[in-house]
Image (cartoon, rainbow, N blue to C red):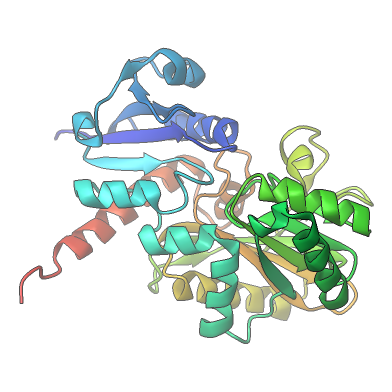
Length: 351
């Protein structure tokens, strides 16, 4: 029986390039060699795709691998896009693979794009699942923020509607890149300019004294879909979950499952799946909540359609607690991708 040719994409034109390499390393190490022929494909920040027969050094493939002229040159039966952030998790790669008619792991074009764009995602949840709480927020045009007078007006509006502390975010990034916590006007002014350097839209959210609660979803939205128990990111007092905390200082720890009342844990599982289905996700997603320590309200923070995927990342750990180990997770995601592709391929193209 011939093996499935699986192209694993990593790197990408994104500030999350290095995180992608870490995730892809774990995926490639876990691929079942009896079922799959893994082909590493590195995408440079310049957009050039490169490949190699030796997958031991992924950064070297990005720099010096053999260039590819197009996705069809891969002759892949299936693609696993282990890409985080813009130009990978935002529907762009998914659209390319749809046009090439190649099956791929994860959500489709619309779900990927809408979950990547925090502003769009928030409005969709408000319309489709209005009883799932979200923190108050505003969306700003980053281009307008380049003008000092416009920025002053935005700051005054944010102070009146959200107050301090608040968090500024580029609408279309992940891994907390470009995210700032603001406790006064000077910090907010600098943070708006920082976020505007990463995207054309900026989201500002009201700060809450929150616990970071995350759940993993595995499936295509049907009854077979697995939703993990909630897990919690444990941080030292006075620390918030920024890029430094996630990937550099290593001060965060996990609690799986989180210490929550059973009724609350079950409600979070229900709401995580509802958000997954409402946004049209498939394959996988990590659904993040902010649990207000003062009010007890659980706010949907954001869904991540291609969360951090190293063997020690939160998503694989949550799914492992649910009974699916890392190698089985990789195989299951490939199966879900092939099933979704077959379902879509069976749709009529004529009248």
